[in-house]
Image 1 (cartoon, helix red, strand yellow):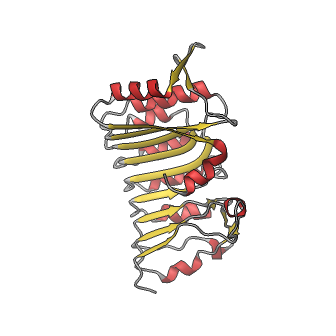
Image 2 (tube, rainbow, N blue to C red; image 1 turned 180 degrees about the horizontal axis):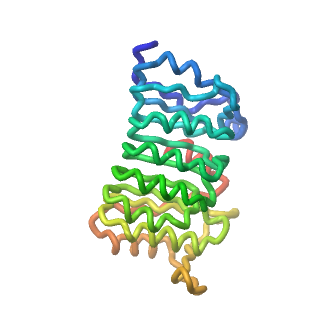
Length: 263
C-alpha cells in the first residue's frame, strides 16, 4: 500500500471483552510504516495502552508527507519516538494520548514543530517543566490547544503569547492543589484575546460528582471561592460573550473511556 494517504486504527486491542479491553496493554512495532512514504494522516489509538520498547523496530520512521499524527494510546517509556516526531517539522496537528511517562526536559522537542496548528496532550499530570512552556511559546501559529488532565503553573504566561489561538479545551488535573490549579487555568484562559471556543472540563474525584468548583481568590491569598458549574459557565461567557463556551464533567473512573472516544 505505498500510495496510502490515510491510515486510522483508533482502537487497537488484544482483548475483546470488558473491562479487559480498557486496561490490557498491547505491543506494536512502527518500523513497517516506512513503506508508506505518501502517508499524510496517521491515527493509532488504544484504551488499554500501547507499549513501545526502545528497539529500532518500535521507532516512528521519518515520513516526509505526514501532516496529521494522533498517537492516543501510547506509553512513551522512551523519548525516541518524540525525537522522531520532532524531525517531522512539517506536522500541522499532533495528538499524544499518554504523556505520564514523558521525562522532564523532553517536552522541549515539541518546540521544533513550529508549523503546528493543533496540539492535544493527554494525562501529563503535574508538569513543572519550563521547557514545555518554552516549546508552546514557539508554536506561534497554534490555533487549537487541548490539555487533558494536566497541571501547568506557567500556562498563564504562555497562552497570552499565542496570538492565533482560537480553540482551547482544558481539563485541569485537580487531584492535588485543586483550587490553585483551577485558578491558574482560569487566569490563563482569561488572558486569551482571540478565542472562538472554550471547553473547561472537570475530572471528578471519588464516587460522586461535586456540585462546586474551588478556586483560589488570587495566587497569593489563601481565600477560596466556590463556583457552581453554572456560575463557572456564566463567568466564562461574561469574559467571552461572542464565542461558544462549554463546561463538562466526567468521573475519574470513566476518564480513560472518555478520552478514547475522543470527546
